[in-house]
Length: 103
DNA sequence: ATGCTGACAGGAG
DNA sequence: ACTCCTGCCAGCA
Image 1 (cartoon, rainbow, N blue to C red):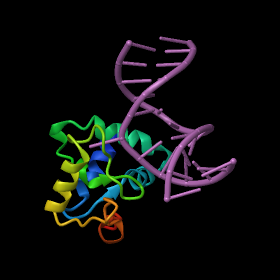
Image 2: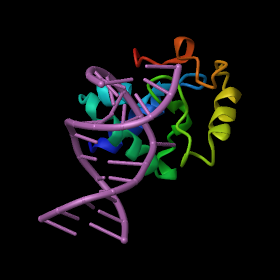
Image 3: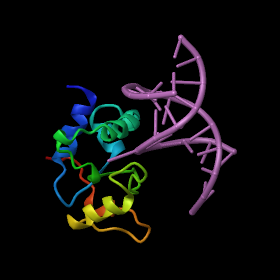
């Protein structure tokens, strides 16, 4: 199982209405320092992977921005549509929606 | 091969 | 609170 494959597998487990962070994913894969590679993996996410990359946010809940989906606003809209709430600063309410992969 | 960049994170100044 | 620096590793000029 290649690194990106594991990333996709985990992200796919995130239920609608929940989010997770790059660091968390990297940690679950055994190497917290590979957070950047997680980001790279998301950027390279093939459509066929069916990975809800919009549910993956930064360590503090801030959205990816830049190259993502066409804008942070889009990612935010997608999450809101799934029931995810945001803080005044535009960050995801991790306290309520962070997926800890307890399943 | 070398160096810079990047959907990141964490620590230091 | 904010900016800068380093670690990690894949991709590209």
